[in-house]
Each structure stands twice: as C-alpha cells, then as structure tokens.
Image (cartoon, rainbow, N blue to C red; front, side, top):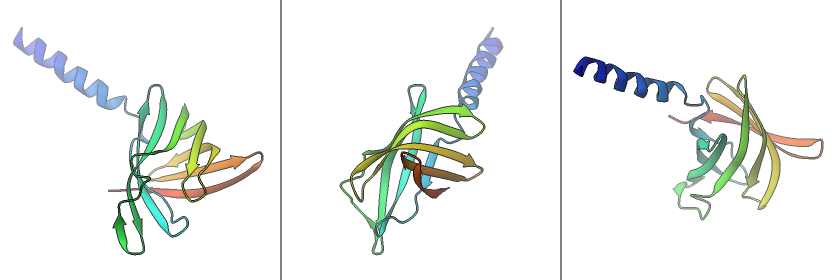
Length: 127
C-alpha cells in the first residue's frame, strides 16, 4: 500500500512539472532607453504573463519603480512556441501595445503592435 501511495505521489509531481509551459522562467530583455530588465514569465490562469523582476542600466542593477509591474499579460499559447493576443507595456513611454511572442529554444521574439506596424525585441533566457 505504501509503495502505491509513493508511486501515485511521484506521478502527480511529474505530471505537474510536465505541464509547465516552456516559456515559463526568467527572460532578459534588450536595452530600451538605456535600461533592460529580467522578466519573470509565468501562467496567469490559462494565459501567460510577465512581470519585471530586476532592472539594470549602464551603472548595473538598480531599483526601478517598474519592478513588480506587469510587462506582458493575456498571452494565449496556441502552440508551436507561439503566443498571441496579449498586451505589452513599454515603460520608457508608458504605452500599452497589442503583443505576440515566438519562442525558439532560449530565444523569445517579443513584439508590440499598433495596427500593422510592429516593433520587437529578442529576449534571451536568463540563467
């Protein structure tokens, strides 16, 4: 009986780990307006969201007022490393854009769009 209970617990733990979205984790943004961030990507319900965890400028790490704020939210993961129908906030101009992401290995192409015009960054997985 004890063996069955241990096996069931192990199965439950591995099933939870296997269901984690591959984009989850810490991502380093590109420099924008002299600063960059480490963003924590995690589920928010059935969607994917990203929160600013750390900030850096030419002087090194600093305590930006943006730490803890949502940078990306409402990303829907249709599959194949794609994420769509989300929003992204650009701290340097305090504007929110429609957003999508495409993950390939340890790279995440993130773009924000106004109509047909999109600007983007290539984020790298932070270790």
